[in-house]
Amino acid sequence: QVQLVESGGASVQPGGSLRLSCLASGITVRNNYMSWYRQAPGKERELVAGFVTGGSINYADSVKGRFTISRDSVKNTVYLQMTLLKPEDTAVYFCHANGYYWGQGTQVTVSS
Image (cartoon, rainbow, N blue to C red; front, side, top):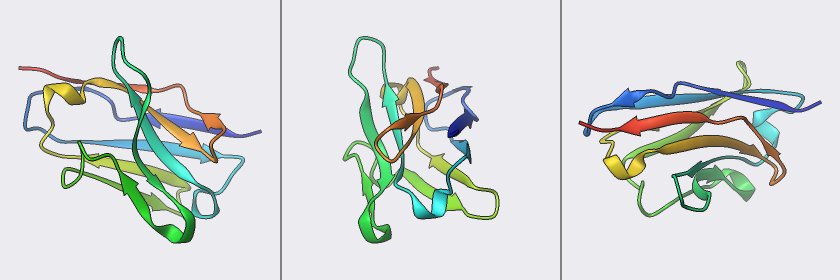
């Protein structure tokens, strides 16, 4: 049984930083396609960052240079380090695995 549990969401001011975590069970983050998505109110869910074939990483243009995805095989956890946060980054952030499994999401709010 695959489970993805996100944590780390919070309310921060513009320019702030957060690190989201996705603890995986039932799969290994090292050998699977792990990614982060987000969904803002009234908008479709969109890819933020993800590992693709060969270990390469894709980032949405809107987060390039500000967000970094990483994974820890020992902790079986995927991270999303977010810096220089903007109000438009406000959304529920979801962990996603293999194009099929989803976590429950964690709320990120960027507001002054």
